[in-house]
Image (cartoon, rainbow, N blue to C red; front, side):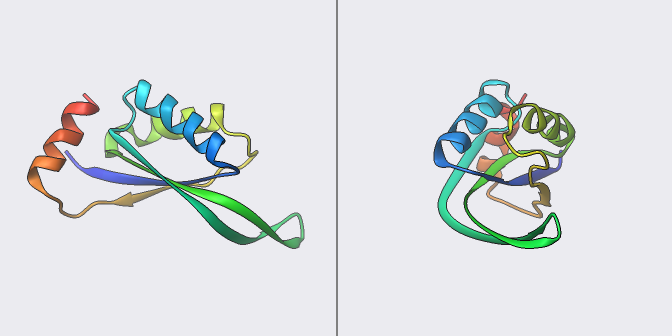
Length: 104
């Protein structure tokens, strides 16, 4: 089964932890990495905006991605949350097997 990384952003470490815990508790991913301290520049409402954000990376199976996006939509504070699917080509076989077990 194909594995993917779900790349997301959150407005704070607390929001990222809340989101990550929910995704883990619902077995929509096997692991969440939270990387604070990112500066984002982006177009929003006809202007260029700048904000501090937190990167959230969830390791999951491709077939769970749509459900993961639905949960992020329901839990996230942003009206348009960033959730991107990044395919995983290869990985450590035992790690990939662990990911599979934890999201079963």
